[in-house]
Amino acid sequence: MTPHMNVMLAGLDHYVRDKAAACRHLEEWTAAGKQWLSYKTIPWNKESADEVYEYWANTTGFQHPLVDGIVIDEANGDDLESYGYFAAAVHRLNANPRFRGKSVHARCDALYGDDRSTEFARVCLAGGGYLCWERYFGEERTAKAMRESLRRYMAAPMVKWERVFPGVTRRMVMAFGSMSEPPENMNFLPTVDHRVCMDMQMQYLATYPAFFGIGGIQWYHNGHAGEETVRCIGRLYRHYAIDGKTEPMIVSPFNLGHIVNPDFGDGTKGWTLMPAAADSLQVKTYKNYGDRVQGRFFGGIGDRVIRPQGIGDTFFLIRRSAAAPNIFMQEIRNLERGRFYSMKMMTADYQDLLEGWSSKALHAVSIRLAGVTMLPGAKNNFQFPIRQARAIGKFDWKYRFYSNYHWRVFRAGGTSAELTVTDWGGDFFPGEPAGQELMFSFIEIQPYLELED
Image (cartoon, rainbow, N blue to C red; front, side, top):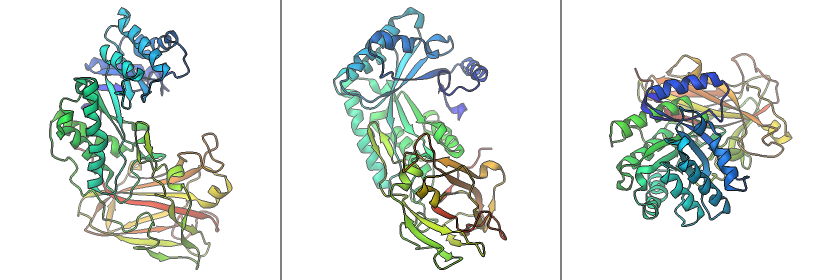
């Protein structure tokens, strides 16, 4: 990603484990003529402009000579008294000659409401700051619905921004959401190509007249994005914002047609089942499992956070037998010979969820893909434990429930392949005790963004 960027927002006051390394990266980055901004929260607990000023003035963004200011998070609007403190503090920072060349940038929702938050935005702009407008778009079920969401929540509000702040487009950073893996995952529909959704957002920005001259683009944030997604963002920057192209970068259908019923919402439709016993493989539902455990996150448009009710709550529940594995399988369709694809799946221990107990254990599961060539390397073939996304039952931020995230990358050998999943860790041994009940869901086959030469 880094060759396609000119501003870094990272580390320094937050997320720094190795300060020496952070300073080395900072020196290298700024020596290349690029900017680095420090991240800082909005201090809602401060009760005066003086307190807010001291809080922000003593950040690395204002104290370090190589850092160009701070990005504060999050200003979601309203006529709160606190915004008066924030505006006064930013005004003092702007006026201080020691901080010449540094600015306060605000990650925000709509601040065009003609109230104290609007004045706060105006003071940030006056000091050279940008407004980082948060527009987090999760997957819609159809391309038509995705386009309508972009029109409604991007294009229409932009008219209001310009009405209140004439010329603000050139000082606006469009902040999209890159969350593509649990526990905060806007790639939550296994029937939709998430990369196409990302591409549609960037193409809309590049072609809709209201965004001509947009000041910047940001994707939030790498910590919740897979390696492929991060590379995809870098290429989107290059394709639209640097090379100036307007045609789609991702040439793939919006809706994935490789697996039938990938989330088991239609019961066992499309799947061939080989249960070890009469009742050892069945379809079940657990309320809020998709949202609170798997982190299927529709997106957030400022304070408009939508969580997809019911999506991901259905799963295959499989009880392990010591005599034979439980098997479910399906033909993978509509592949392109020689193209790369990813396969994703999630598993969880059902009894642990019911009983309020969990561990970071890896589940004994086998995934077989026939008719393809598997890519070698750990980043192409892994399984790891993930904490639950939100509180559910006895589990909260202190006491975590862990499920497993499975990932494979392969090259298609033809137009079809065969996927087989079992609850044994190997061909001849279970790998875990008989009687364990595992939940299987979110089985997604999606084209994979290949590495550049």
